[in-house]
Length: 395
Length: 98
Image 1 (cartoon, chains in turn yellow, orange):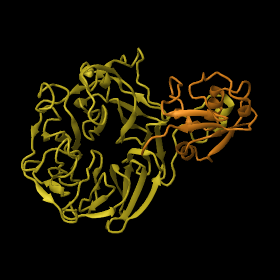
Image 2 (cartoon, chains in turn orange, purple):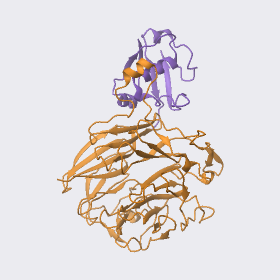
Image 3 (cartoon, helix red, strand yellow):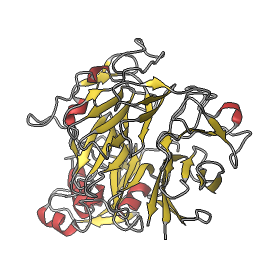
Image 4 (cartoon, helix red, strand yellow):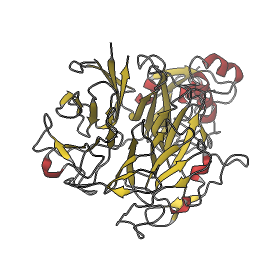
């Protein structure tokens, strides 16, 4: 019997929504880590009960939480059950929330500067983990995208994290700049076929690809056109909001940029716009149907200064042709007086049949469709502002 | 026995009550109290003081026996009433909306 588990990160805690394969009745568990900002919660595909969560606070810093039982109980890797040892040795051992840029001679890059909002140079400063991406092969390995933009990896279940410094140390680093939400590495896509290939997206630098497991990187932004930067076709500086692939065809990438919906059919080497008939091509999330590699979903938002849907109507747009031609999906979604936003990590698909689509809003609603997006129902209406949504299909 | 009062978020993180107790050998200073707190509750490491620099996080304040000791040297001795356990050492999150 298939079960669906939706992992929701919000401004004031995490929630876990579960249902059977019918996706009609949901139980709601939470808040976990009440009062803390939960930027992202994501489970391993190898072991779905292994879940990582990014818990953060402007007051008290970054915490990594891990569950080994599907979210029933949580621990901070490296901190659990070691109090006596720590007391005996006099040195606390809890280092799971320790993200330190690698500046070592052996593996690191100098901690240089990046562009600040006013164009001056600003030192790299760690703020928080935006995105956690568990390895496709090993539940103890997970990648973390952080602000200020860098990529970290753990291979011991989150006890220790090490920067893959080749990305931050790319020669274009001084030209990277923060977006409105900070200079964050918010998207990590692991290629399931081309082993060692990793895609990352950074606001506002653009998209980067590694073909050697994260050691070396190059920007892949050819074809992007961003009117809001001094050189609209620059190699870096683009505010990419999200990218997505279908696992059967990872050479095709879909991108929601600050403005423009884009696609690449050559692993990101070149991009072309597929915004087509969208009412607005500004938005944050983009998702690919679990069984139809050319069916994609976006949520158009009016503009970068007006972060709500056009005409006060919450509409998911679906393209069954990989872009260009889009249809509005409105059945069950509010079609008047709706002024919420849907953030970049707040849309996900399950792998049941038919495919389920889920998204959360800054108004605290989590909507679900169990029929490819044709109709929608709220699972829950009044959570804190939703930052992230991930779907697990458990058989 | 040193009494330490924690803000709500750190209580939930450490799964403890508002007030906890720690033992400090030697001089009772901010640093000694925080070292003891982190040894007793490793999950709090990095939350009150930044990991690498061990400096107080900017939005955290310390009070001792009614005195704001936030900006005192971490190696200055705290008031005797903290060392005796008559008053708690208070870790407070700076007030802000949200």
